[in-house]
Length: 525
Ligand code: KIV
Ligand code: ZN
View (cartoon, rainbow, N blue to C red):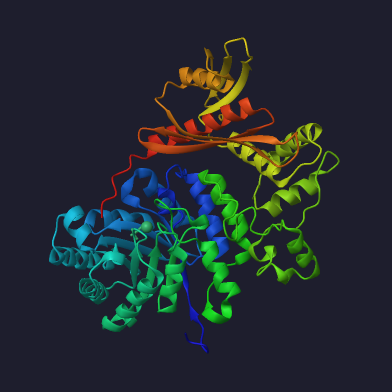
């Protein structure tokens, strides 16, 4: 490693593309914009905003993000075809710093079995595609898909040809998370040694986590000369996910003397970003996840607590404030005023502009504080999310519900749903249905199904208490499948039947609006 002049490490975030490929993680345009905004605040250098040809919805979000984000480069993904590249360019061309990212498989397995081609044909496709992309855009990234399992001679040959015709970043993905750190590092070292023009491009890596080695492989690649890392918030992504941005950024900070690299991540924005992505994708962060898990800075054993009280460094290698975990907060309750609540909302990381929304949240806060002695951050997050959903363009909104259950009766529910209730001008259409079920939640879901009339299948249902105490709010997180796509929904209430109904309706709204905009194409390199 160069110990005198610090090299710059480029952070390429693909939460909105590879991350969004996690089952259930699909986000709408408004949600993607919120994530892109926060990624810019976090300081990532490149935001991969989507795969424009894959659907009209993806195209629109890449285009809108390109128009609105001014600091980071905006990349769009495409296959090595003119049609894909043109669609990608038409979406990213509005960006201050646009990037076209072309991927094409280079392993024999993918070339033969997936593409039905020969190495020569693939080489030719890559060269033609990059030449075409270069005629539109200066910044071109070429990804040799499944590079982790590609033949080294062919990999070096295609990289050299790609750089010759204008690729400025060469990405080496470990697409299926098969590599071991030592091997992956050696691969990068060999590329540096064997590719004659490699100094004209930045070497990037993109590691998947199938064996839990995504971060380790990324670090090994950096040690051997890679200078762009592709990663996602909370490590979400296809299958077991991608290398997690927060782990990489904190390793580079905590072990900065070892790595000696510059980068532009503002680590104190990590916690907010992680919360936002988890909230919008519906993918919870495991409690023991490094850096952003709920237990990452919790000390349970008496010996550890004693050590921490004497000197924090006895059991903490970084401070919670380094990653932006809010410090011990002031206790909020029914005597708290607007100012304290609004400050807390801001500290948690929400940006609420409209004073009307704030007033509505304050009213709900007061009502909750009447039921609950102490209001925790989780309660506030639930209030803000609920208000967010209510002020957005929700298609269906829960109007009313009543459910009965008992050991000697058949559970029944009546549900009222308002359709298109966001418009001030037109009155919402009101639907009401009654149904029986095996329990009150089942009866509510059957009544909702009668109203909605969509063929929806449940794939996951999780009920938990958020915050503490017997008066805690109940939270339901569920996943449903509609036309082969998974959608998540989240609902909170002091009443778990109501929380279940809200979660289901949120998932239905996502399915309905996503299905209207997104007819996804199969992604075949
Ligand atoms: O995993 C992979 O190979 C990818 C490429 C499209 C970069 O996501
Ligand atoms: Zn990937």
